[in-house]
Length: 273
Image 1 (tube, one colour):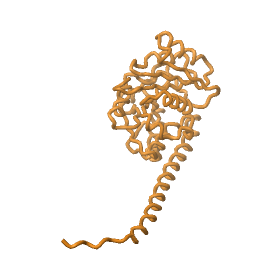
Image 2: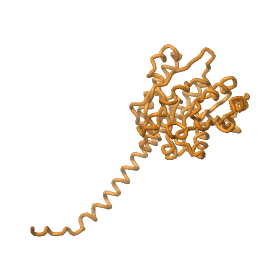
Image 3: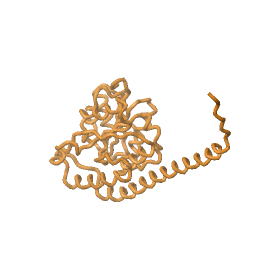
Image 4: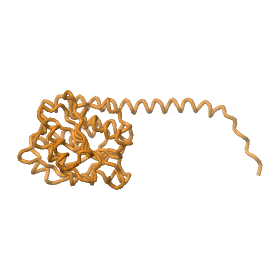
């Protein structure tokens, strides 16, 4: 537990052989549940995660869930979220299975939620000066462009580094999101931000360390990312605007129903002192 709150770490993984074991092994001891979601990997990612749990004598804390077919990183995270809710945790954290997220940053993600200051906290690698020397230039450009677009479509103008997947969410906020409607692949974080805004959730950015080792290789290809994300952003923006319109219409309908009643209600005459 962390500050009297039960914590689950959701680890989506696809072909992370050689990385997943170290990721599982470095999850802090205060985490109650480690949920590895193997998205139909073609290697032995799931087996390595299970072996890592056995080596640390933590088979009860680590659970490996397997998708029979590849459904996408967003769908894998959703599977982890559902399991976390079923386990009754208070906060669900997402960490990548490739060791790209520093477990020492986990308290920074949890503290705003534990203090009651946020419902969803996401990492922002651009708050760390090391990003300019560690993240490849092409990814910096892509992140800046997508972050700017996500500011507009999500409604969270203060949020940056939209593609950073290191996040924490309170179970109450998670239960208010229609998980089945979330985009299942690489546009998932952009879609989630928009839906959180529609639900009135408070979102915070916190500094996290960017990690790009010599052996690191992104699973995101330009075709995978650029093809769906503009459509996801447009869909998310449309969903947010439509929700705002529906709320306004309902509000006007309520006012229209109340106004005639107010006009016909008798007003008592003032009594003499």
